[in-house]
Length: 243
Image (cartoon, rainbow, N blue to C red; front, side, top):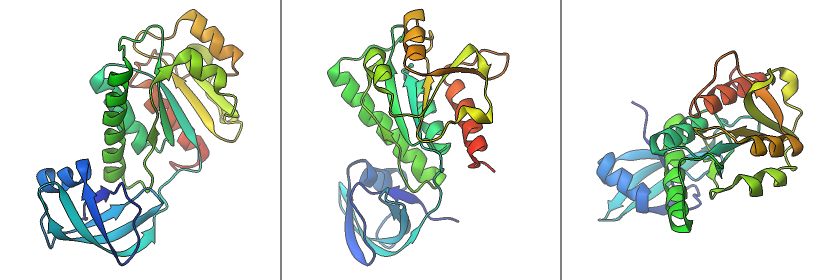
């Protein structure tokens, strides 16, 4: 049976001690029900896994003896930021979980005109923390050496005009052209996906003016939680990440 992988919020070093707190400690103590003497694998997002043994547990913390480390080569060569229109709870969680498994580098939640979900500053902060925990759990399970950053939710009109740093900018649209290998122009990729209600015509035009190419995936209309996963799988395949 393979050892459980746990993400540490602190930098890890071989042959040292480290203490897990917060959600990581809670997961070890109350979900996995591990105790002193149990072994696990710890990682800090730097690209390495470390063998570890639990040497002490408290009510809210777990102390680890960190052993040897080893580089993990589980990241894609393709640097993708997913600009995802915010959808309702379970759907957004699914997108973040599966996008992490598919190797996305960064996730930027987007507040669009037709977004069903509306967030004030407090709610946006809580959502971001929740979504980051979803990404961490998915990285632990899938063997990724790095955890995608989930950025703070931001408005479509603020994000898209500022996306010029991505040489490849793609937006899924049933009216677009078919996805081809030539779609990846190189460098970081921005992948833009609409919310449940799609983007407004004004938003579509703004994306077009901001350099986004409209692409379609087959003859059917995909739901907001299906479209990014299909697109990410195809882009990673084209890049050689999936074989």
